[in-house]
Length: 109
Image 1 (tube, rainbow, N blue to C red):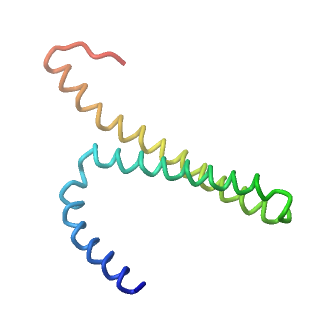
Image 2: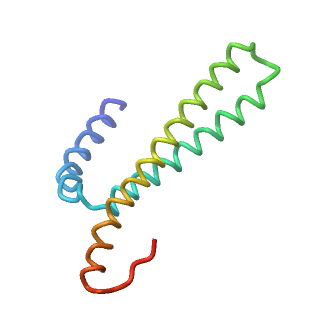
């Protein structure tokens, strides 16, 4: 049963790859992917925090440090993802600003 699920998922990935390649350069798709990733990271961090609070007296300090390490890794992923979102946004907005300036329209910021 597990093998069947793996094969079905592989088949779906093969069907999805051409579609992703076609839209890879679209900023909206990339931004949606990054915001979804941020949402997943925040949810993971909440789960780890909740687990560590519920089990803080049942497990040894080693487990607490392990959970803390996982949260720090996820926090760094959040920072890098936010920086990437900012760079992607700037790269998307800059050509628009130049186009508006060519048309003689005022641009703020």
